[in-house]
Length: 104
Image (cartoon, rainbow, N blue to C red; front, side, top):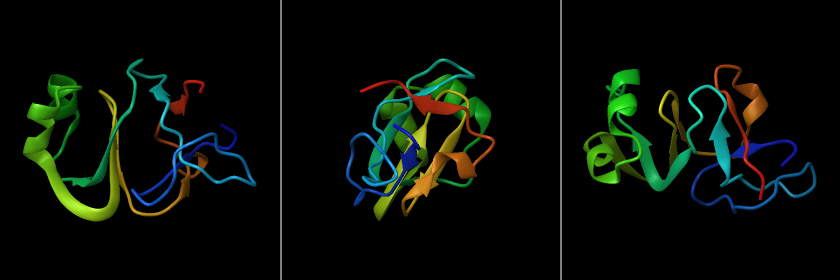
């Protein structure tokens, strides 16, 4: 993917390009070396913190405690970072995230 896009649940998955703006579903974090999980139609509760993800990734049963249903959104998380996204977003606009395409 180049550029790498994040997006809500209505954004299609695939290899992202400037022409074909698709969200990457093969993300990997270069900081914690975890695969980024994504959950359609959910956002993260504002009370989420680093320790919550560090202790609970990638156990969906534990993560559900802080997931809020929101149609059209997509919740992303690795073991050290998390985001709730509603619309197509270029990953480069968020300098704090260390996520890259893990190859399709």
